[in-house]
Every structure is written in structure tokens, then in C-alpha cells.
Image (cartoon, rainbow, N blue to C red; front, side, top):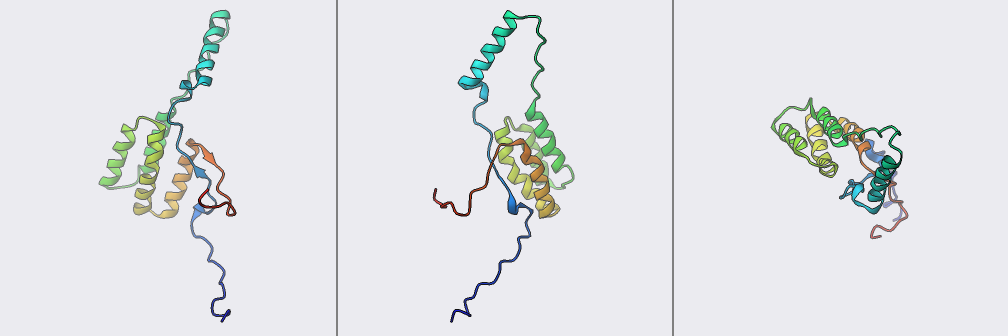
Length: 144
């Protein structure tokens, strides 16, 4: 009886995402609204008033524009109206959090137009713009 229900080894996963890390959405509020962000701004203003000869800090990079450009580049060779609609949604996005939510649509469009492996490669390149955390352990309870 036990021979009939003997376990066969599982087939190796064909997905590139087998060893993925969990990509999380960016913070809902910018860090400048937290007490740390306010304290940092206060300190910078104070130092600027006390020591005006110090060089100006470099202006922060507009990360949203950079991420939008990379999303559009990832979608540039995908034909069709759904891809054009997604390009419009990318252009209208107002935050990195909105861009995080557009990742799945981009993945779907690229997977349909090209193939799943290419979609996974492009998504992996885009995921570097978002916070990550270690994957759950197999020993951890699922309802935790």
C-alpha cells in the first residue's frame, strides 16, 4: 500500500523567481514627515545658519522620474493598446508606491507579449527601487 503512495521527487522549478526576496511597497508617507525627517531638516537649517561657509548639500535625485523612465524602458518594445494604456498609467503615477502597484501589470504585459522569463528578468531589475525583506522560512507557520 505504501508503495502506491510513494513520493516522487518534485520537478525543479522552471521559474527564475524561485529564490526571490519579498519586495515591499515604499512607505506611505515620506520620511521627512516623521520625527527623524523633521529633526534632520532642523539640524541642516541650523548648521547652515551657524556655518554659512560650508558647501551646499547636493540636491536629492528625483527618484520617481528615474523609476518611471526605467518602467517605460522595460515596456518600450511591447506592442499593443494595453501596453500603451500602461505607459499612460506609468506617466500619471504620483509616487513610488503607485509605481510599486504597476509592477504586476508590467509583468503581465511583458509575459504575454514576449515570455515569462523575460518578464521575470525585467521585474527583477525594477525591484531594486523598492524595499525588500528576507523570504519567510519554510518552518514558519503560514498564519503568523
